[in-house]
Image (cartoon, rainbow, N blue to C red; front, side, top):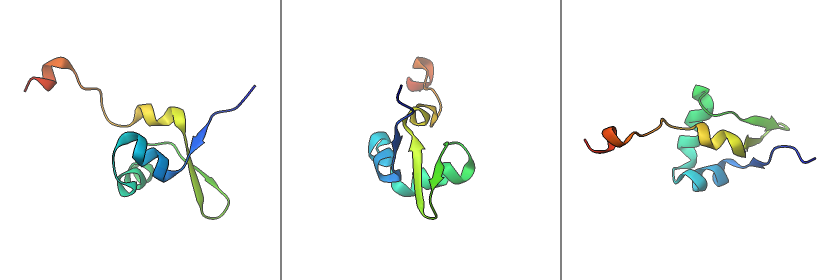
Amino acid sequence: MAGPRYVSIEEAANALDVSTRTIRRHIAAGTLEARRVGPRLIRIPEHALASVGRPLTVAAAAR
């Protein structure tokens, strides 16, 4: 059984269409789960990308 897939900060930014700086801000704020692998490498569980941001309802989109 395979474990969770991890992505780099750049891959996460591309997936969400935001900058790498935005991804780093979410990690620092604690709104995006991340793991440090070694002294410099940061990886983000792919499933955590779905939790970024807040849901947009149809009523809110019509404003």
